[in-house]
Length: 330
Image 1 (cartoon, helix red, strand yellow):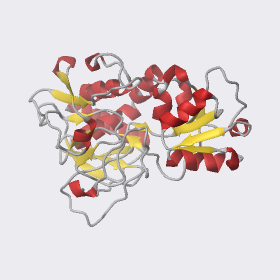
Image 2 (image 1 turned 30 degrees about the vertical axis):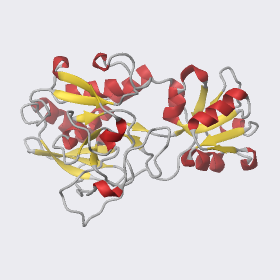
Image 3 (image 1 turned 135 degrees about the vertical axis):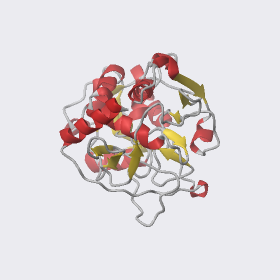
C-alpha cells in the first residue's frame, strides 16, 4: 500500500536508523513457553536471537525500532530494540494480506475481557487493547466494516489449538522463548507498580515508600521492591496479585508492588503511586498472538511500530489508562 510505504519511509528518516539485521526464532509446541496472564508476570523480558535457527517456524518480536529499505523496495524491516528478531516483511496491503476471511481481518479476545483493556463491545474500539486492534486494522487498510471479533479460550489461543481468527488480543505476554504460536512486536510494557488504598497520602518518590509496610506479588515485583524499597525486612511476599490486594484491603500491608496490568485492573479499589525502576533490558510486553507461521505477523508488527512512532499508542494510553500508569518513582 503506497500510504503504508510512505509512512514507513518517513518513520525511518525520523529515527535516523538504517540498520538491517535479521534472525528467526524457531519454536515448538513441546517448548511449553506460552503467553501468561498479566497477573503472573513473565520471567524474562526478551527473546535472545539464535543465529543458527532456520528461517521457518514461529516468530517472536518485541518492542521495535522501525527501519526500511528505500522507496519502491518490496520489503521493509522491523528490528527489535531488545535484539530478538528482525523479520523481512512484504508490502502490507489488503489485496496481498492472506486473512482468515478474504477482505476482512478477524481479531480474537479471551472469554474474560477486563477493563481497561476492553470496555464495551470490541467493535466500538472501547478500551486500550480494543483500540490498538482497531488502529492496526486501519493502518493495514481495513475499513471498520471489514473488522470482526470472535471469542476464544486463552489457553487454546496460546497453545495454538484455537482457529478462526487472524490475531488474538488479551493481555498476552510474549514468553522468553518461541512456542507454538507467533507473537507480534510489543505494544504495552509490563512494569511493576506500587499501589495503596484510595486516599492514602504517600511521601515523594522511592523515599516516601520506606515508612510503609510493603507487600509484593510475583517474582519481578518482589525483586524490584527488594532492590529499591527499604527496609527489605518489612516486606511481605505474596503468591498472587489477588492475595496481595486482599492484604492491602484488610490493612495487613500499607502498599503492594505488583504487575502494572493487575494494578490497572483493580480500578478504583486502589490508588496507583507509580512504577518502580525496572531491571536491565527491555520489560516484558503485551503482544498479539497469531497462528504459527502466519503471513500476517510481520505486517501487524510493522503497524504496531508505526502506532508507536505516529503517537497513536500514546494517545490510546492517555484515553484509557490513568496518568499514574506512567509515573516513574525515583
